[in-house]
Length: 264
Image 1: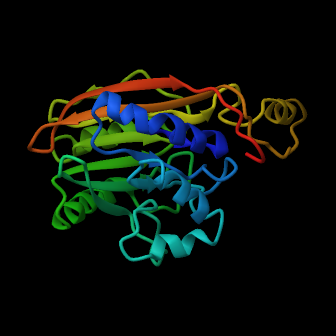
Image 2 (image 1 turned 90 degrees about the vertical axis):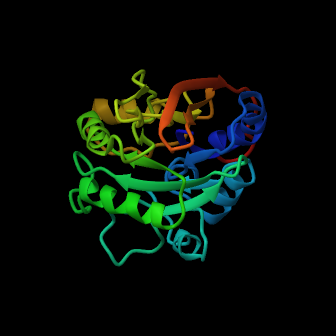
């Protein structure tokens, strides 16, 4: 599930995900949650909120460490809340987890962050990806998935081709705009440039339009506020064979309608 944004995204997970998993025969749900707390960052409470919705593991990105309290959740033994594995060490938490799907498959879920137009101080995601796959398999993963949280389409596509045949799925996040290029590469890797956003789509990538417009018009900083309109869940559904290679991938978009109540 693409970047879960604010309370709107968390409510979408609660109200739509359980029924969707039954309807589609989904064995495991994974989500990027780095914007789940008010549109920027993740708190322990918001992580628990998502995990109670049927999500088995939560990945992060450039806003992972917005709230210092998340460090403790990342460091907990057996934590299923992960952060990009290519943050320079020492760093709280881990860059992958292994979770069990309903059908018994053990799924390695890793997280990486791009450097192009983002954070050049990150370790190389290409080199880190290779060791990350080895670590997930050594931990008992039957199949492997990586959330690549990156800005540039070229960086995402390049990493997908680099890992084809060694990884089950490379799923792009970060831009909050679902792309139409979901595909299976020749070696059996499922790929999409961006899974999209689960949150308020009557917005500017989740925020109320007024403040970004003002920032563009004036050239000055403005405090962005999460929108609460246009709720939609965006995700991809991936099917794997017994060897951990992808057989199919398709993007989905489910519209939700509810009053989020209280602060976003």
